[in-house]
Length: 138
Ligand SMILES: Cc1cc2nc3c(=O)[nH]c(=O)nc-3n(C[C@H](O)[C@H](O)[C@H](O)COP(=O)(O)O)c2cc1C
Image (cartoon, rainbow, N blue to C red; front, side, top):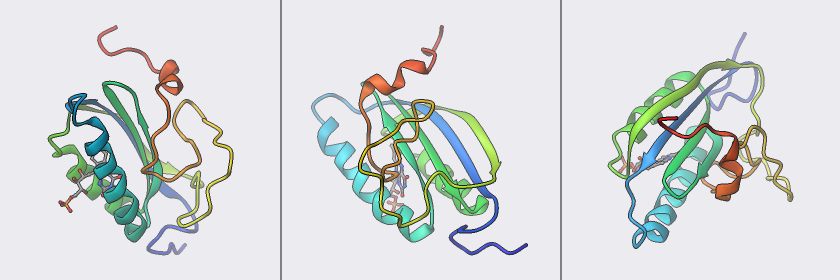
């Protein structure tokens, strides 16, 4: 079985983690804007798709693509000082991507498991979507 570099066909690797934000309220808008912007362009080049969920103090991100690429990206993201206490929630092959790279997002976001908005990987969703996640330490 052959897979394209962008993982367009066959199984893709999906990794989901959560982390605690270290971004202060004053910087929040600016820093999130920077993260969205770099993630949007860089993930597209890498053939990585996914979703980023943001609450007041936590991130949950799903990354999908070729395994080595996703693992490398996760390694880089995990060293980012804007968050800490990364916890790997899930990793492994999945039969299909939730979104194809470069596809047009649906007009209406349909959250699945509070994670996938069907939007760009760099797009945040409202805090209320995180309701299904257990609180840390509980
Ligand atoms: C919660 C969070 C999610 C991030 N997601 C991505 C991402 O999906 N893709 C990406 O390229 N960078 C992402 N970043 C930013 C990277 O950690 C890093 O700052 C950025 O890729 C620039 O790296 P460079 O300076 O080595 O080019 C994320 C950062 C945080 C804090």
